[in-house]
Image 1 (tube, protein in one colour):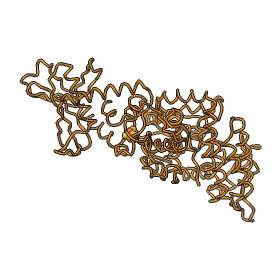
Image 2 (image 1 turned 180 degrees about the vertical axis):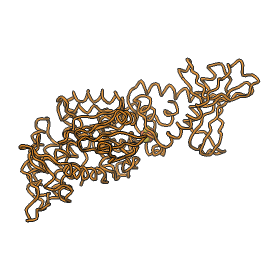
Image 3 (image 1 turned 30 degrees about the vertical axis):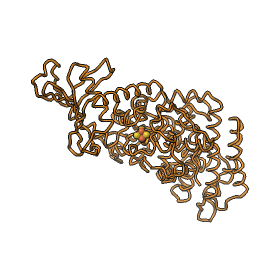
Image 4 (image 1 turned 45 degrees about the vertical axis):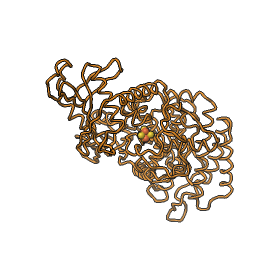
Length: 570
Ligand code: SF4
């Protein structure tokens, strides 16, 4: 706890106040090393019995009421009647003027351990950090200046936890690329969002007590400089889709196995899968449910027609702070309108961009109309007026949607057409594809909302309705054209889905297995496509962008960043 606070107060807040934790290669190898060290525990003789002894006690846990601390020590060395705690570190020591030195966070942690030992009656004059990367021991003298610094850091950490507001991220710090929470914290993106707001208002916004800003100087970095991309551009894990009648998903060891009766038809290692999607009557064994819940990988359930109706997942994140703020903001009409304006303005601009890029003959009147409607959306002062603007824009956009579909029949007629958007049930092939693609997007944003700690059912634009993931629907507005519509257009124009991939039941139209597979392929390709974030300037996949936007919305909801900026492509 103290180590994290001294390394970065924001990291401390995430891990110790919000309970957020993520593994990096450093934390994994650190935990493995501690597992080895902790496997053997030896008793530490009482303080009155250590005189004349020389020994090492492993995995010692002691507490101090004076300092309100519990110390778990890897090793305590006893010699000459005194004790010295030893802590194992994965990395290398700091290069000091006169040789290797312990890092400030490690010095504070070791000092806290020494204080606990002293409070239990032991004499403790020094502590030792063992750095595995260089295999070096670095001694730390437990002197008065270090004790004062450590006690001050402890007090500050406790005040921060009580204060209940997350501190600003470090600025341009070399610590961030090594931090396991960089993909959650988004330090540069958060700082840049604050900088833009300052530019707009001309004010220095102090959202947090200066005590917790941690760094002197301007609050945020300049928006002109290139942001570091601290998150991987793409995920290594992929969704697994299982579609068909009577299939079973079981597991053997760490591998998921899809079987048709007894015949194995597909395999995937659990570590390569980010979510399991099952369509229709697919049986998932309890062993698979247990393994995926433990691995925090959700199972999304779809009807055979593609209706997304459920999610099975583990306990996940318990970030009640974000949900509390979300519920408060959802009751604030002004906040809801501001957020909704950003979602819808970006959606209309993205619809216009899609027409501009893909229409066989971009319609100038419709483009001008969408531009005007986007400007009107940005000015709307009520959710009702915004709904009206959004509806008008949708009519203009879908009226020209067929111009983006270029697959022809043998006789030269167009293979697909669309008169207007219809759903529940969709009554033509294009609407059937759009509905399924929107269901995939709803699923992805529902999962992301859960992962971040949002309640996906409490939205700001979409109003409450039983079973409706309103926040996921809010967040997907700006991505409908860019991801779902674009995937449908690609699937049709590249013939991944053809006119004979549909089944009709009365007036309802749905995709058959071949059509579903084709659309899934187009959708996943789109999610995997790299795109430049227009505000942050780096290239990441759409799958990452969805998460980044949801995390930026979380910053706005908690008051850390004042304004949500929708995602728009040029
Ligand atoms: S990414 Fe940087 S600012 Fe964020 S928690 Fe980690 S060290 Fe702190």
